[in-house]
Amino acid sequence: MDAFYASVELRQRPELRGKPVVVCGSGPRAVVTTASYEARKLAGIHSAMPAAVARRRLPDAIYLPPDFNAYREASGQVMAVLRRNAETVEVVGLDEAYLDLTGIFSPKATMRRIAAQIKEETGLTCSVGISESRMLAKITSELGKPAGLVVLSREQALERFAADSPGLIPGVGPKSVAKLEAMGIRTLAQLRARDPVALEHAFGPRQGRWLHSRAGFEDETPITVVRETKSQSTEITFDVDVRGQAELEAHLEQLAEELCRRLAKRQLEGRTIGIKVRLDDWTNVSRSHTVEQPTNDLAVVGPVALDLLRAYAPQRPVRLLGVRLAGFDSGEAPEANEPPEAQMQLGLTA
DNA sequence: TCTGGGGTCCTCAATCCC
DNA sequence: TCTGGGGATTGAGGACCC
Image (cartoon, rainbow, N blue to C red; front, side, top):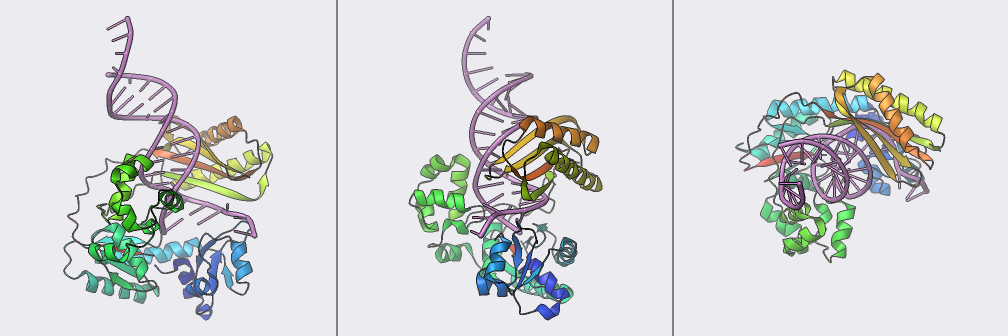
């Protein structure tokens, strides 16, 4: 979906159309969640940018607090349209999904129709990328933003992106880009030309092979409908770093309460209870403990989390505190999703 | 200018068991 | 009895994504 959160807000307030709109929290440490295309163009505002920076660059923009209930509802409407039109829909976050269109006679016409339906029923626009794999569909969808539809084959991608940075590949972030550059690799063509053994040496066998195949736009990741929840967490970044153990413990109990409430609502029970602490110098520390029986009981989660915090006893001011539960007993054996004889898969992404 | 919250997946080390 | 190789599980940390 295009600038999803901002677009949902604009749907409620059409009078703001054409103006730069930024969705972000209000605290001193808030970051930008979404910026409308006007805000992006005018001042280069993008998500994850500190809200304070955005406000300084563009004081006259419209700043709105996020309304996740509205986004969830809008997302539900969009995904309903997709599911009505395709058998295999993999939802990735609130504003992104992959459709497996293997065997569909005319993917392009089909997607035009679906995008039009989304627009008609929700008033929101999306960008569509159609290609031979999940990864390529995602990359392709970026080309048409906003509200575009682009079809690209693997062959075309090899040519078109040869001189692009390896960072184009989803899953290759700033750290990996820097590491590759240190090896003299600045483009996808250079990455593809590199001996896989050298990559495996630098990145480990798995990651090395993965990088090399992705540089050639090879990807056979199937599109799966069901995504099992692996963990759930609640965390808070304090407006001002917290120093006292007692204050930390009070926050931790609140967080545990909140987490258990949400877990109970979803009827999830897990065995591994963990805490996460971010110190003022940005170091992250996690501690966890696995109990015998799956639980979401505050009477179990609370004390375990508290024990973990006491045992760690942070020696520096704390910026962020979180609680996490993982190790859910998977309700049933993950059913064998038939390996896709992927001829044509399609991604529809933000 | 000073970096959210909610996740997933991977790696590596330690430990236990067969 | 000694030795070693796996596999599974746990725990910590980190990269990355929406």
